[in-house]
Amino acid sequence: MGFKENDSKYIAGTYARFPVIITRGKGSLVYDETGKEYIDLSTGIAVNTFGIADDEWISAITEQLNRVQHTSNLYYSEPNIKLAEMLCERTGMKKVFFSNSGAEANECAIKVARKYAADKKGEDYNTIITLKNSFHGRTITTLAATGQDVFHKDFLPLTEGFCYVEANNIAELEKAVKTHKCAAIMFECVQGEGGVMPLDKEFVDEIVRLAKEFDILTVVDEVQTGNGRTGTLYCYMQYGFTPDIVSTAKGLAGGLPLGATLMGEKTQNVLGIGSHGSTFGGNPICAAAAVNILSRIDEGLLSSVREKSEYIIKELSVADGVKSVSGKGLMLGVETEKDANEIIAECMKNGLLVIKAKNKIRLLPALNIPFEQLQTAVEIIKNACKG
Ligand SMILES: *Cc1c(COP(=O)(O)O)cnc(C)c1O
Image (tube, rainbow, N blue to C red; front, side, top):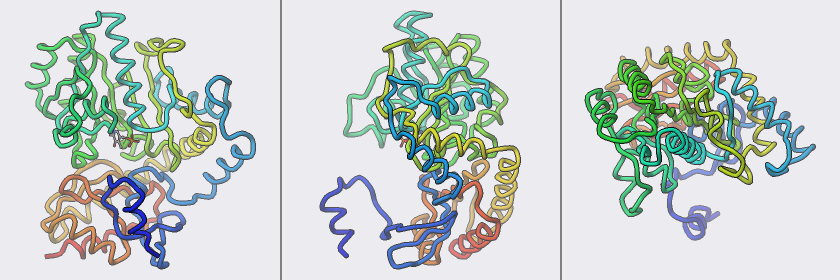
């Protein structure tokens, strides 16, 4: 077939791919080019919220596809308005800007934060504090927001005005707030690419307290943690505060590209006509997909996400060869005695797709994965981890 050769001949070499083509699937089962079946705990990196080729989701998209596929943002769009209303009603946020990806949702968040601070406190209040080990995207500005040198190297100079503090280090945070003229503090409640590390409640409380004291905005990156992934609609809801800006993408449209930046009470009117835009942003097909996905992330689904999470944690945290399990809901990181790559390869051989986050195995099952498939997946992981 020569697909590997042609891939490396014609496609920029930015990805270390696993040696399979996923040709089709249904729900949490996928099949490669040889017909081999896998249980999928990778979901296209937390994107396929209800798995592959979900019937209801396909109907919602198909219906919209038969009406209109794209209009540009120069005209009103029904699925767009519906989705924005749903997002605001379920979060208490006030307005939404739609884009196509996580990085773009964060770009918008950064623009809103900078403009809010410039309008209110002056242009020199432009510093955005982010966390070490964070991940916010691959554009030059979201790379700057990303607190990991490995991603910066070779692309300097990046956008100015970011400073990094260690996650869960309150003293460092206070120092940064007091030594910079800040616009915002931006963070993931569970650092995903950074190794599936949840922030301490006390640290987030302190972010919120300092933000209030110094009129600094809180920007929560829910690109990976959002849309039911961590057992609540958005992860910040488990920390008991309302952010000024929330960005999300990945699972929002269940497998189609859509980003959203949600703005709260303070920030809702920062963007005016001409201050931001996107040709594809909020595309009707993607918006219709997201309306379907969001309408199905109800309390019943969320409680099943939490139950499945508890099951995985209970089984794996005491398993032979497992050092620790971290994360929330169905966004979990498993630290193993063996090298993560070895475990991933062994799982793959045995019909299970899992991915990596730093040195851990990252589990991101579809939110509706059938329990029996999850049980089988956990057994495969346990066997792979054994000494
Ligand atoms: C994946 C991710 C991004 C980037 O999203 P893209 O859609 O790849 O641009 C940003 N922030 C977090 C927390 C992510 O997990």
